Image (cartoon, rainbow, N blue to C red; front, side):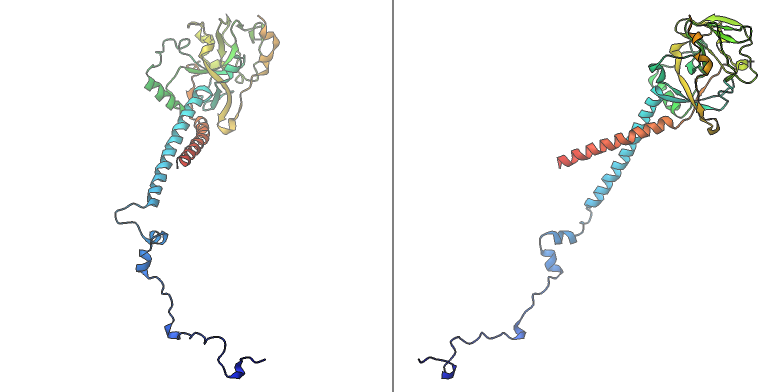
Length: 329
């Protein structure tokens, strides 16, 4: 069998290979220069292009908005804290400064106490409670009534937060007799009696102080309280106001709250508990200073509680505002 092959001297069955171009003919794709890059549309040109002269960058606008938002939120936080502090002072707790010695040694000059304004909404006033009350209309019946101007009242409330007080008709005393009680001094042992039961007052009376150097016998009118200081020798209390309206007693409605703790100075810190003598079941049978005025004392508690309540409220309203903004976008 005959066939064609290389040995036959004939040409191969395929054509000659394509010629390889010379190295000199090869070209590399040149990189884009500044002109070409800036002419390309898209993110590269936008990223490298700076803000136009006289324009405001987006980042700068965001910074200004954040700055304004910070100061606005700070202002709102302060306003909310102030409102809460006013509410706390008016309805919950308030501090008072003791300027006289008629409650010694239970309360010394310079002590600061907190009064609970809620307790008498939950229970009645008890014998032995130390109460702060407004004496205008009973002990200070000639005192002009407070101004009804809303701005004056607002200023008074704001001053009360930091302890500034101009009201000399606020007193602090211990409740000895409740409405209907017969309070008298003195029995054969020179003790004050309530409904015939003798009070053992040695635990809270000023050392060496008699229960009373004045003799009296009164029945407390309905709705009133008979109150006395713990330093009886210098306490201008119900005994010495018997010529005033109410016969020395003060209205229950005039009580601002119960003093329950001494908060200053730290060495005097402690709760003001009811002495044991007032727990007697028998009680439930049918040179003097100008009273014991107390001054509203500076206390950070209302403002601190105000801020404690304002912070979560501010955070919550910020979260709500952020979510609403995200939904709009």
